[in-house]
Length: 480
Image 1 (cartoon, helix red, strand yellow):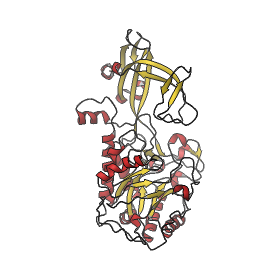
Image 2 (cartoon, helix red, strand yellow):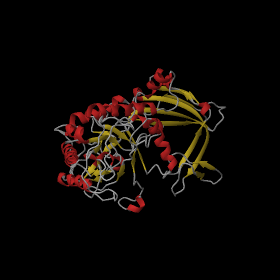
Image 3 (cartoon, helix red, strand yellow):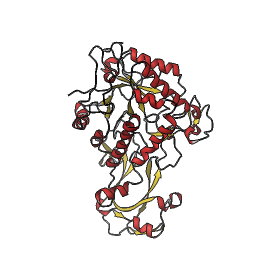
Image 4 (cartoon, helix red, strand yellow):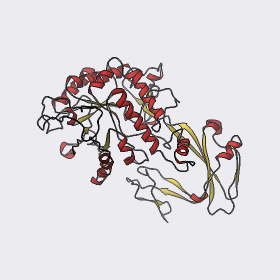
């Protein structure tokens, strides 16, 4: 069974490092399958020879472009240098200072992002130049579907296709105490945004302090008074001290219909004889997370101009749990990126339309139609969060677009950073990708490759060389 692992290496813009010591600078040749979209092990692919492997099976470099202001001649020279050290091509994406909007506010950017933002004219020119350089040097290119992690594109704020969130609010009631009147935050979000109102009996309340050292989910946090030990919550790594509340699962009541019938008012009494210390009533509103994939120029200092259209106003993370919302990304590409010959170039040298780990910052991973989709699929109302099926629909939609529209394959780090069944999502991509940052033990790789093998995937991609806190410091021996 033939299988080729794509070696993705972090790369500093304009400095291609000759890490691939075993690859000679020889003439490269294309090796796309006869049926370019065939992702199976037995695809008709010419891998070349050991002395002269084809571009398809050579290692490729992750190529972070700082933004669209990068000099096109220098970018083209980097592509040529990739061929000279024996690489198969670049995995091209825009850096754009990385991460979400809250980390961008007040940050200096040395170039005007109304001109050099992702997806507008200068970026389209860079993508075309990179693709042309790949064609000139006999290489193949992977291209990210958006800035930084590839999670979104420019769009009108509040568009249906952008990432959703649940805004939570709660009220504490003493045993026997009543709540009567309009529910909290109704004036801000409106009754049409209300998703659920749930009450529950609190059985335990403790102040918890998290140790200052790195904490894993399997470790324990200690109570402030030192009389007990309480399990750490998922994501405790770097968490702050907190009040930890435990609810009785059997006491949970869905009060949503009562609020709807009374046009936003609620009457509820915490039972006097409840076996607990108090009651909590939770209110959940459906809102957009407003998570940015690239900051707006309005949120940056430096030589910024006022955006004249949404295209100049940065990128928003899109909803990853719907086929309809996938169109937010693909429509933008068709209308604003795949122009002036770029589409034809990518059809000739494009390898993967690609997405990195999913780093959308939100209270809850949610989508607008999740409750209705759950009822349609299972025949009863949603009681616990389920997103895997809808995420697979998103992956299927992106894969179909890449295959049918551009004649390239799809690749992503599936469900990476999301609370879902990663193994179930793996078969929905042409080339599923994992990362050394999150996969450290052989058994973890076995779990990832199992579903890919069962699905007959020819390529299992791996982003290697990822290490926390060691940017541009990793040595070749350490990488090996």
